[in-house]
Amino acid sequence: MAVLLVASALGSAAAVGTVGAATSSQKAYAGTNVSFDTTSNAVVDYAVDGETVMQSVKVQSQSETESSGSLSADVELSAASDIAGAAVSLDAKSETSASMSTDSGATLRAHDNERGVLTVRAGDDSQYVAVNLSSSAEAASQSSERVVVTTEDGTEGVFLVVGDGELTVNEQGNVSASLEGDSKLAFRSYPEGRTEDDEQQEQLITSGQAAAEVYVMQQSESGSEAVADVVQYGDNTTVEVTQQSEGTVRMTAERSEHQGKVVITSVSEEVVDATNDVQVTVDGEAAARASSYSALQSAIDGGDTSKFLVRQQASADASASVLVAVNHFSERQITMTESDTTSSGTAATTTETDSTTTASETTDEQTAAQTDESTSSTSSPGFGVTVALAALIGVALYAARQS
Image (cartoon, rainbow, N blue to C red; front, side):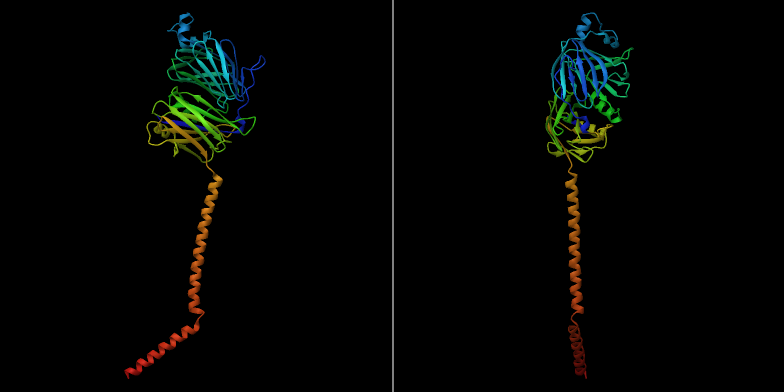
C-alpha cells in the first residue's frame, strides 16, 4: 500500500524543550510546545504554546459505563460528557512525548511538536472520551468524525476520529467521542491558523490514508542536535527515523499490508530546508514530484511510482510540509535530502564557463586559420608574381606553336 509522507520544515523557534521531572509544584509534563497535568481519572490543563485548550480529558470503557448504569447504550453520545473516567497513569515521558494508560484499556500519548498532537487509542474495548474545553474555547462540529475548536486568542484545533467512531458537541460546548475497538481520537492544534492544506491532511488521517506523522525537530539546548517524534495512526504501520542530520533525513516505514498509506512528517528547516528544492527517494529510487493531493492519492492507490508534494505552512517558523506517497509496502526506506544549491550553482557555472571556453577556443582556431589563409595570400607577394609570369610564358609558347 502506498504511503504518503508529509514533510514539514520548521524553524528553530519550534525547537523541542527539555522535560523537567514532575514534582508537586510542576506539571506532569512540560515541553516546549505542550504541557499538561494529570489527576487520578483525567488528563487536565492540556495547553499548546501556553494556550490551554482542554480543561480535562476523561476516558471510560463503554461496557463499564453501561453496566454501571451511568449511561445506557441507546442514549445520545452528548451525554457521555458526564462519565466519571477510568484511572489514569503516567507511564513514560521523554523530551518529545508522554504516554499514559487507563484502567479501561485505552492509551493516551501527548506529542511535544508544533501541532501539540494528543491521541487516544481505544485498545481492544470500545471507549467513551469526554473532553471539557477551556472556558475561552468554542467547538463546532463539521462532521461525525471532525470537530473544530477555536480559542479566545485565535488558536484553532481539530478533533479527528480515525477508524470506527463518532464525535459530537454537547449543549455546554464540550466534545464527546465514541470509539470502537482499535479506533483512535486525535487532536491537532494550529497556533498560526488552519489552512486548506491542513484540512486536506486531516482528510488523509480520517480516511485512513495517513498511517503516521513524523516530526524531526531541532533540540533547543544544544541548537544543533535534531530529535524525532512519531505519531502512529495505523496499527499495522511502524515508522522509525534512522538519520536526522544536516541536509538529510532517513526513515524506515514498515507495514504488514502491501497497499500504500500516508505518513505525515515535519522537518526543521535547519535539518532539511524543504522550502528549497528537496529530493525524495524510496528504496533509492527518485519519487516523482506531485502538484496536487489527488496525484498523491493516485500513487498510494496502486500507482507505478512513489510521489511527493511540498506545501508551505502558515507558520511564523517558515515551515513547509513535504507529503510523500509511497506506492506499496512491506518495508520501505524513505530518504529526504536538501538539494545542494551551492554545488548545483557551481556546476552550472562551470558548465557555462566550459562552454564559453570551448567557444572561445573554437573562435581562436577559426581566427588562426583565417589569419593563415590571409598570410598565405598577402604576406608572400613573390609567389603571386611568379605564378603570373609563368602563365604569360605559357601563353606565348602556345601562340608560337600555332603560328
